[in-house]
Image (cartoon, rainbow, N blue to C red; front, side):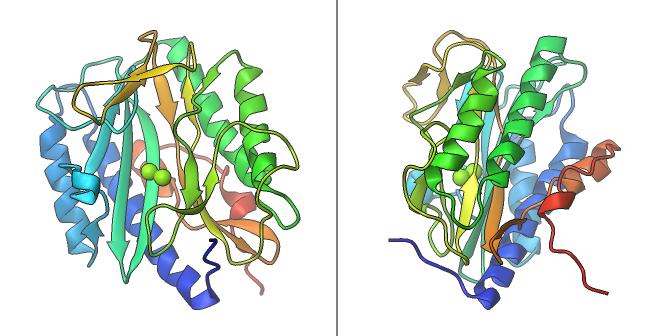
Length: 271
Ligand code: MG
Ligand code: MG
C-alpha cells in the first residue's frame, strides 16, 4: 500500500533527508587516502545524533553500523571495517536517519584521490541516470517510466544495471511501497500520485549486472570484480512534479564542486 504524505509530513521528511545530506557532506571532507572506515562510521553516528536524529540503518535487520560502506566492487550493504581507503578507490556510502518518525535515505559514491578515467565515467553516468530517472517521477507516469529511463541510459553506456536491489517508497518505514526498480518497461507498474515520496537509487556496474553476496550476509559485490556506483536521492511528488528532499550540495561545498544539477528539482520560489 502506498502511504501518501501530507504537506506537513513532507516537510518533516525534508528535515530527515537533510540530516543525511549534511552527514554525507561532513564525510566528504574526511574521505581521503588513509581514512579509517570505522572511525568515519562513528563520526557519522555522532553527527546524526547531534542533529536530533538517530541512525536509520544501525540495528535495522541487525545491521551493525551507521553507514553502508561499499568500496570498489562492492555494490551496496558493505560493512565498515578497519581497512583504510586507498588512492584510486571509489567508496559508495549509503546513510539513513530517523527524525520525527520519518526516514531519510541518501547515498553517494566518492572518488578517493585520483581515480581511473573509466571509473570516473561510471560515477558520472550513474549520477546522471539518477536525474534521468527523477525527471520521470511525475504525475501521470508510472514506476516503469522511471525504471526504463535509468536502465536505458546506463545500458546505452554499456553498463550493467543491478536487478536484485531496488529503490523504494520512503516514510515512517525505511522501505515502503512501491518498489522502484532501476530496470523495466515504460507505462508499467504503479501510477504516481501527488504526495508520494520515494528513494530513487541506481546501482550500476561497470561490467556485468550479475552480483554475489559475501558470507557476512550483507555485502553485495559485482560478480566480475569490476567497480560499481550508487547514488540515491529522496524525492517528493508535489504539484505533479518531482522535488528533491535530499541534496548533494553539502558534498559539493566540501569538495569545492560547482553544480546546478539539482536546480530543476527545487521548488520555484515565488517573489
Ligand atoms: Mg540508501
Ligand atoms: Mg534506499
